[in-house]
Amino acid sequence: MVYAYNSKIYLAEAVLNVKDLAGQVAFYTQIIGLEIQTQTEREVILGAGNKPLVHLIQTNREEAVKSSYGLYHMAILLPSREDLADVFKHIAELDYPFVGAADHGYFVGAADHGYSEALYLEDLEGNGIELYRDKPVAEWDIREDGRIVGVTEELSAQEIYEMGRKVEPFVIAKDTRMGHIHLSVQDSQLSSAFYQEVLELTDKFTIPSASWIASGDYHHHLAVNEWGGKDLAKREEDMSGLAYYVVEVEDKGDLIAIAERANNRGAEVKWLSSNALTFKDNDGILTRVRKNINN
Image (cartoon, rainbow, N blue to C red; front, side, top):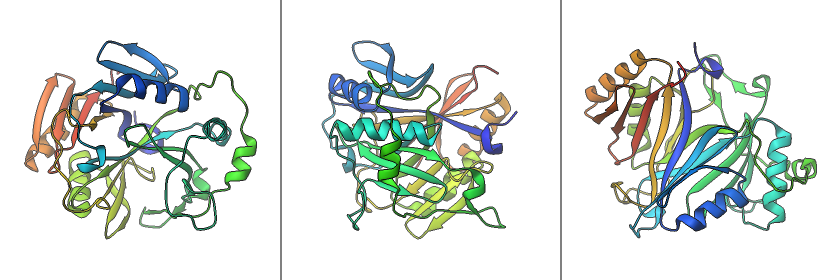
């Protein structure tokens, strides 16, 4: 069995170290529309339907999220354009700010990427969030060599906003899932090569400062960019921001192969159980890989 788009991996959740746990829980429930799934004094798991998507852990570290390498954004995939419209309308009417490229005369904080339509914002501590829907594959710019070319063009924001339904109380669509993870790294080309080898991903689209890579026929499961600069801090345990993100694979053989390839690249690999491991890249970014618990 493979995942959607003939992929051998599935992006499951992002785990964040946060300074203000209560405030961040309020943000992800009230602004994004996730639901609390489990909660303790220091950790809260939020998700859509029965799927965990965002796991928050209280930290006492005080660094700003953007002072170190780590998360550029987590990309939450809505199942339809209508569902994207609902969350767009909800956030806009709360007057919560979207963020993004400089204003070129159209709505800031949103883009049409050719293969997707996306909205961009940040949580209360500066962790980047993309909310998007995929267009039908027939509309993607897929080249003969398998590359999938992305663009950044004006989103039909007014059209999508007007599609939105007023949902009270607002809850994000139950089939929403994590679509991809975009990382801030020191050297995008080295990082892209590392993740391509360890996770058996292929280059879908690359520019000198960034790379979009995927398993199978998807436009990207991971992206890496060096837009934060060459002098950010290496990630350390408990730093504010990305603690780790979770990749799921179908069987134990895939897990063992990932461990071997990571070891061959000199990455630090730790087995957490017989069905889960972590590996760390040169920027201190931690990836957790687990076997599908339903398989």
